[in-house]
Image (cartoon, rainbow, N blue to C red; front, top):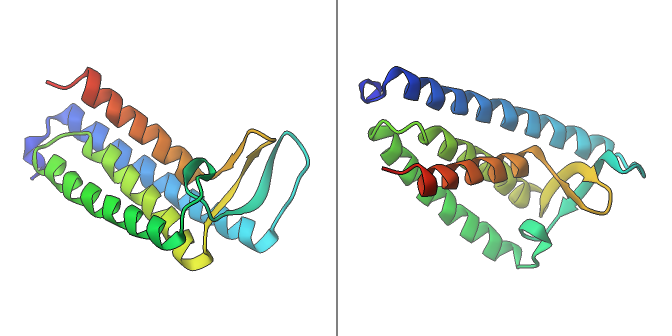
Length: 150
């Protein structure tokens, strides 16, 4: 399967896979740490425990609806991932990152009733590494699809 990749595309794809695994392992570690310690700081930037039962950007929806929709998106991303992989596209690594990050947050929803957030930016937002990975890889993926597609 990997003979379809040229050397640069393979390095990009492998790099995204490795980065995604590193971020998700770090995210899971920090979520466990935040859950055990439940830290609270009053500083502008801090490591705080917060259980977000809402959707992204605190949009309120029922948990069962969120879990169902996110689960379906993960299945679609998985199918798309294998199509990209079969075609030798390095963007498979970006989609892999989206899948892992989505699974991490979905696990939280099922296990804890909401997503565990821990990076606090004062009154602006509180999020986790999986959220950051979703936003970054989704943005990069869409950028390459819109501006660099053949």
